[in-house]
Image (cartoon, rainbow over all chains, first blue to last red; front, side, top):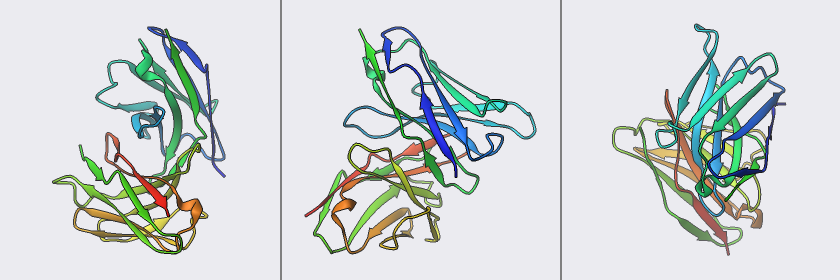
Length: 121
Length: 111
């Protein structure tokens, strides 16, 4: 059974870089799509981006939300079955619960349990 | 890029049925969508995906009380025999080759 586990600092200072990792178990990270989604307290879900290993290219391919594209970078490591998120120049508006997720080729989605990241001034 | 529209809130009585609606933007009426449930303080949970033809496939362990359907650009989630634990936020979501898009969510209150 697929399991996703987010990890990383729960507190980041404003203007610094937020870095999170999602550990994948129970499925191959070489298949499907791997994404990050966030949710500020009391608000809705916001897609951040996705990463996947392209069969033809053999390395990670990414797509990002247009609103975050200038500050986001994602990577994927098949040797450790982990994928990562980096968000630079964070502000209080980036305070949220961050979820990692897997989307299968058929469209179903599996969520991680989420990790709260607070940006402090 | 598609846009999804949901009502912000809905309510129905215990034991009754409720139908939540998610509307796809113009030009995207054939898109598949997914429904997710988020109970208070919990991570979202995938419920099902619905194709434009109305065919739906539920996730593992989703009760039979939950079903999906479609009409034009609208995608529906119907919950029958409402239980207290169905009180939650419900999000629809769609995706294409470059993005995943969420609706604003519907807060369901069970009376």
